[in-house]
Image (cartoon, rainbow over all chains, first blue to last red; front, top):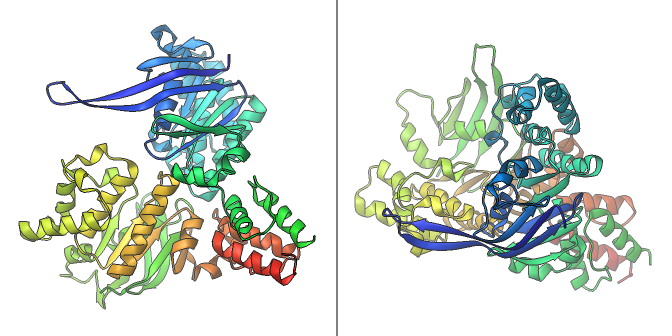
Length: 285
Length: 287
């Protein structure tokens, strides 16, 4: 069994009137099946309201399924005794770092998580050092978080999660608020944690460029998983993606336009480098 | 109609304290009626400070701002009228929406302008229709809406005051690609059909390249570039040095040019790139 396994997961939100009678039911997750292997880098795409964040919150037991089961590292999320161990196993990084940072000094913020779960003081400092190193923020350890750039703040938030030593980190649109540099920093950090520390990554995003290096991609719509495959497989289905209110990376878009104009560019172009090579081989043919 | 001139604007936060930060340094700008301007810059470059000065939410530490020839810092200048003229849509719609229904929320601006109820409702109706907000949601609370719909209501709320200038601070942050296209398409339609001046603050170089006529690049509180998109993105190496980037395709055409394909390196959108690549390949008689 993978580190995260979801079987026929349904989640319903109930809207109640003032007397507590159910006014309407929204099905946010509709029989979702997921199997993530330890050490994978997974991306989840889908438009606003498609159920991505609801799914993410299930992985960390912030929400539990109305129907179906989720196991996180073999632990059933429905069993309340598992809640704390699950949260130690699966960390979360949210969209807005300001909602996640609480202390007035960077290193104290990073130490907050381990302190909260009763890690001995010496060990806390070791973890703080390692986590700040992992996100390349050691030289800012004595700084106040609110003077940092957006990307730096988000990296501090990530360090705070890394310090809990989770096996898996869920990133819920971690770059939505950031400038181009900040976006690059955060995505590079996620890949680094995946490669060097073997942390399983689940990245939820609206930026198609951030997905091209993932191992596997799920596309959600109306609470269902409607497409899944490797980035190359997913992004070769341009029309289908557009139907789901999504897009393709710019390089894929240009490749598509060239192909429809009759240029023999192969399917499945994802990166700029691949596109440049493909165009040059046509030019030098 | 609004013609805005910024003359040697400086702005310092926490002036005279240990936490003093100079957010704007000697900024000179002219904004003409009907322009569609993109403002880009890294986090903390002074973009938001600039937008807040333009509608009088902040007051410059030194320098003058003229709107239609009048100095807005003159005694007796009608700041309320300025805020009707220059509308500001905040980055987070949740900071802006507060009423019990979407319709009431949009009524708030014109109500403050002192219009009578009939005109207020007419304005609100018109504004919500202009942003393509579905009628069946008019009387729903704004907080249950999706991110894209919330933004529409927030924009309608400003639009209902009939501003000459509309400033949008990252209106597409957190929206899915289709939502991004819808909101920007809407802004562009308002620019075209209503003749409103648009100032779009954005982190997405692709969006800026696609829509705006002029780009102002802010860096450490100063204006670094102020030119046409093609001219600005030609400086992509300098942009990178200050934490920005050019649109993806700018890099693509530059790399192709370096490898000897005669493409126009000024292409900034996918369509332009495809066109110049096609004509370069045709020129070489390979397709």
